[in-house]
Length: 298
Image (cartoon, rainbow, N blue to C red; front, side):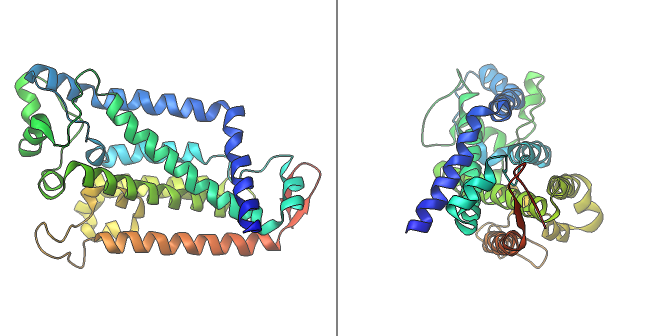
């Protein structure tokens, strides 16, 4: 219990650094601005139809283009991994290596959750003043789920695509919770990739590794699946953040060999995330601390 308390305190110290950096506030404003831009045509469509908008659009947001943008935001969120500064060696000496490292893992879990909540809440706030809080998909979302080209009758090109499968199979609250859970898990995975690779290489190589995963996800969603088939999704785990890319068994039969089922997506990302945690522990425990400059070296 004492070790967990130390780890939680180390996580809080890392999280408290948000107050001293403009990066996080900038990220928040950029996220809100992009969401407002991305949903503008949807709000205009609702106004033209004279109908309010239900707030449950988050499960439908993660198209290939949105996965690319949200992935870039995740890179910015964890750009300073492994979260060290000139005070870090002294914190490690007082808390211990393993509690400090556990605290950084807790920080990644917490930061990913806050980012997910910000994105989900932001996707609701940008719908004002057309917003109508109800536990129902609403007429507008149901209309667009059945006819993705409905915006053309008002001269609008919609950039938010409502999944008919999600609307038919899930209630709004179910879809929100599942969509947020998948996105959170993928964000944690991305953060651990950046953290572990940066820690092991003592460089920013983790950002390039995670950036390559983001780029592969966009390629798979736009051209890759037409060239290589649906099997390419097995090599783009970041695409599993979207409910669009998961095969839900009740909607059209069991998942095939080239389809990603929800159990496979969750278990695979959790297993690889735990592997990254294990590798980070091995690397960090073998590294020497240099008190001057707050950096690590062998």
